[in-house]
Length: 245
Image (cartoon, rainbow, N blue to C red; front, side):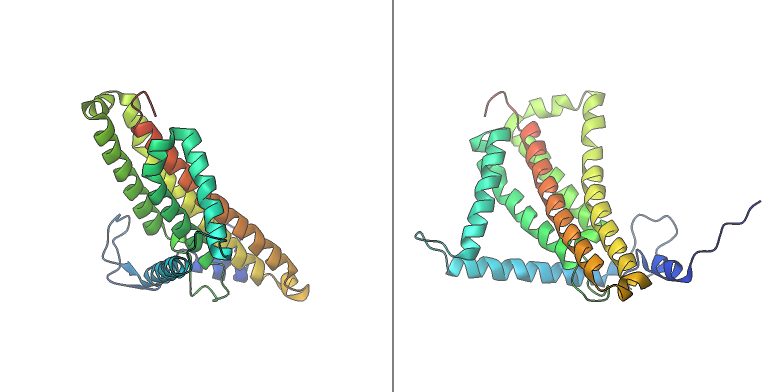
C-alpha cells in the first residue's frame, strides 16, 4: 500500500485549526450530533453582531426623518425598497408585507455575521455563520415559521400536501441545504483567507492579493445573505400559496 504524502508543515498547522472553537463543556462522543459543548467564540461573535444591529437601529430611529434622509437612512431605504419590490414580484404585495420584517432582519444579521470574520483578529473573532450551529438554527427557525404560516394560510390543505412523498422529498432537505450552503461558503472564505495570508509569497509581494481576496469575500458575504433572504421569501410564497396574492 502506498503511504500518503506528508502535508507541508504550514498547511498541516492551518488544517489542524480548521473547525476549532474556543469552547467549554465535555468532549462530545465520536459521531454525536448533540453535546454539551458551547462554542464561546461563536457566542461572542453573535453578541457583537446583535449589539451592532441594536445600535444601528437606535441610531437610525433617532435620526429618522420624513424629509431629506441621511446616509444610513437613505442606504437602508434603498435596500428595503429593492427587497420589497422583489418580494412583491415573487409573491404579491400582501404576503410580501408579511415576510419582509423577517427577511430584512435576517439579511442584516447574516450580512454582518458574514463580514465579521474578515476583521484582522488573527482568527480570534470568527463569523457566526462559519459555525454550523448558527446556520442550522437560522434555517430551522425560518422553516418552522414558514410551515406555521402555511398552516395559517391553507389550514387542512397544507396538511394534505404532506400525504404526497414528493412533499417530504421537497420539504425535509430545505433546512439542511439552507444551512450548509451558507456555512460552506463563509467557512471556505475564512479558510482560504488564512491560507492566502500565510503564504510566504504574499508576505514578500505586499498585501495586495490579500486585499483582493477580502474584497471578493465581502462580495460573497453579500451574495450569500441575499440568497438566504430570497430563498426565505420564495419558500414562504410556496407554503402560503392559496390561488391568489
